[in-house]
Image (cartoon, rainbow, N blue to C red; front, side, top):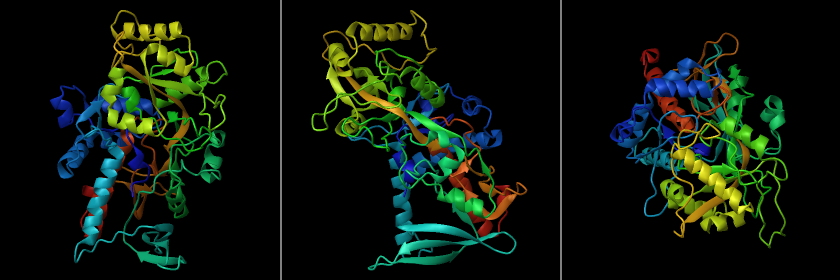
Length: 472
């Protein structure tokens, strides 16, 4: 359980939350709505955005108070005008990725409910839904799923009747080498690496479309600028995501000449575009020296940059998560600026000037060349401090599909033919479209799952119990 949500690590957004208030952060619902709509480049449904934002503080309270999730650290990530992305601090030096903490906590709760004596709730895993069933009036009446017969491995088909189905199957960013949906809607992206798991193949989108659901924004695919390139496996098409929280904590991006080329806290689409423009040639692309066991030489990718953190930025991010990246061979540490220049193979004087200019803008002595106004930490470690720099190589990677089934603020899936709800079919999360428009803000994916997942659950419960869900 959990899918790509369990891999999310930067955080979950909330405006005017209790944590923000306790930290003196003067955020507002209006500012959050504005940031989300601006990020969507005019394609986002304002109605969907407002529902998500207006219920964000309550969603945070539900997670913190109902499930005791310690979402007490707040960062300002790309495209946000205030710090509002909540995550969980390391514990005893061990990382606690926010997506995994939320998904595993809720998953454990469901498992406990299923295991109670007399419970009407069943949790079926290791199964694959293949189609939805409909009644004569077009209402959803159930589904068909496949599972392996215990002991034999033989695939069995099962028919399950249901008055309401909540679709939460995710997007299609993990289709792999045979990308049916990507080939149809965004063929120019075929060949790019992806951060998605192989389960994100768009099955839910296809099944909903087969029963008449409208699709929207299917060509809007988010390319995340920072998928890690692993030194001993650089050509692997699946990349481990370099969390945006690394830049939110103060990390910067450098090209192969040791120069910055973008506001690191701009929106993901803008950072990706700048990386492709500034880090794609032989001289400007970040490169590795491979381990001897792999053969030596340099690794070339379509576009690649160095992600660099000072000691202060690393301390702010948390050494539990950073240590995990280091154990995976994704991030590396070196002592002193000369050590960093040698590791990333750039001129020491040029690198020093880059970091001096950054810190000068942070101290308001000069204006940043890329329009950056939020500088979480200084980049130059104190001379003779022995402090470390941390670095890795990152490349643009398919990360999120903004398109999916069209839905409304009650989480009802809408028909292609007339725009009306398909009775009995609800949806939440990446399987839906219309909320994020052309570009999703960091931290909004987990938030939409909670807000619209709760909405879908409330609507389903009201409908099957004979209440009036439209009044929720």
